[in-house]
Amino acid sequence: MEKTGKRWRFVILLVVLGICLAFLRPTINWYFRTSEADQKLALQSLEKIKEYSVQQAAKDVKALEADAAANPSAPLGEKYQWLSKSVKKNCKEYKKSIPEPLTLGAALSSFSLGRVAKSDEEKKNVASSIHARLLELYQNRYREKVLADKRNYTNSVKLGLDLSGGMNIIVRADLDAAVKNNEQSVAAAGGEAAFKSRAMEQAIDTLKSRIDRFGLTEPVIRQQGEDRVYIEIPGAEQSDAINTIIMGKGILNFRLVDDEATNQFLQAYYSNPDATFDENGKLVNPDMVPSDVEIVGYYTKDSYGLDEFVQYMAVKKEVALDGRYVKSAEVSRDQMGQTGVDFTLDGDGAEIFANFTGDHVGERLAVISDNKIKSAATIKTKIAGGRVRIDGFGLEEAQNLQKVLQTAWLEVPLSVESQQVIGAELGEKTIHDGLMALAIGLIAIFAFMLLYYKGAGINAIVAQILNLYILFAVLSAFNLTLTLPSIAGMILTVGMAVDANVIIFERIKEELRLGKSRGAAIEAGFEGAAWAIWDSNITTFIAAMFLSKLGTGSIQGFAVSLAIGVASSVFTALFVSRLMFDVGTEAFKKKTTSISWRVK
View 1: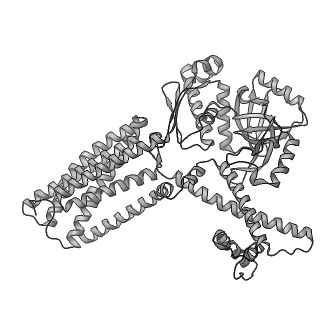
View 2: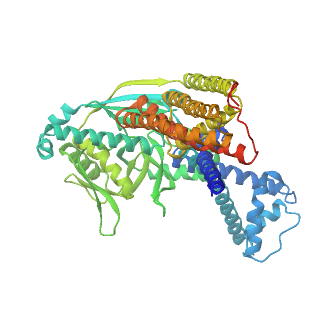
View 3: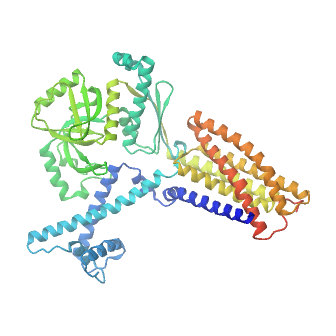
């Protein structure tokens, strides 16, 4: 019965280690198997990733078609070998034999199986179909790779601002001005205090939705004091762009579509799509469009609820109306079930919008949100009264837009009070110093345990290594952020875990001095030390949990890593170390215990 229990302990240990490895895989893949260039790409927004996939696919298909035209009998080679899977699928679908050897010409021909072209027009259509299928294959290949990297980042241990560099920003909300400008809303909210609380909640929600939708790296956003919001964005470099997002410039506006400029641009773009935009998404040749317009993507919702790019449009740079004129906003569904946002303009906004729509009847008006065209309907008549509805949103996006508009309605002025940029070099130095401290501490502890406790010290070392392994796995499992205080908590955990091993070893030595056998001394030692270890670690765990709940910032990071470390150190000391002693007794038939220079 006792041997069965030990086997189960061994199985449990293997299961725990396997689960931890599964949790750590995204972290290992992200930090050790993903290049710096791929990391930078994966941290972009989904729209940027889609644009990248489209542009890269256009370049690669163009190169493939050129190679096939120059030498159709050339083998696929390593560069195009991945296409063989699709070629085999095409041949299997139409019950054709797979060409041997597989050449570039045969590979491209497989995408036209099932279609017979006789006239020149039909041949052109077949070539166009092959081109479209190849584009789709390449786009899928790039998208799947980048999204896999993005999932690894999402599920990995993040580096905090003090380790990765980035920005911290303090935004001040002028609540007194909000109260002054919304006297009726103050009364409806149940008093000034309740109104201010609601205004801060909406301001924080607005900032979260604005920053999150721009694909920035895991921002930390929380209220600080009564009227300030603390924002921490690791790895951010474009401070001007981030300030624009925070201040809400350009979040929602209405602009005219220039159809003539749109047609001219699309003709040039479709003839050379891979050389129209640079790597930052800006026009390579700005002179291809008039100076008073800019190119913006038009998006619709796909079947997954994501923005799907349709085409580019040229819109006037001059903003006809922006979100600051919005008085109230609400999410609703029309008779067709489409989600939209209804908002009411104030007196000035209603007059501006009425005059503008009256002057431009017959032209198209683009509704632009987050620098994406959501709608481009034709102005059929003058829109007076200040009541406006915009469609084309999913429920979640409509709710986020409503929050942005509600902030404008509440007129809570936001201003950047302070902004600090921490360079990547400082972050790298911090990581180096923190890891060096952890490594030196571990080496010193390992050396002491080996010198003082001899063979039993190996058990303590293995327990320490597994302790850190489990600690990092839990951090990865809950997508927690690693900061310098977190590393300090780990170092403290290592010391506390050694304390548990010291208590156990000293108890075993006492039992050996009484003349007990190896097995009896080990069992009595663990039983005698267990309650002392549980008591000390439970009290530490309780203190760490209170710190994690009540503390903020660095205190919270320290407390979380300490709490996780305490739990894992108890497991490794009482479970793993005990199992290693039992394996030595049962499997290796050891009669003596190497635990002291004076006690055998």
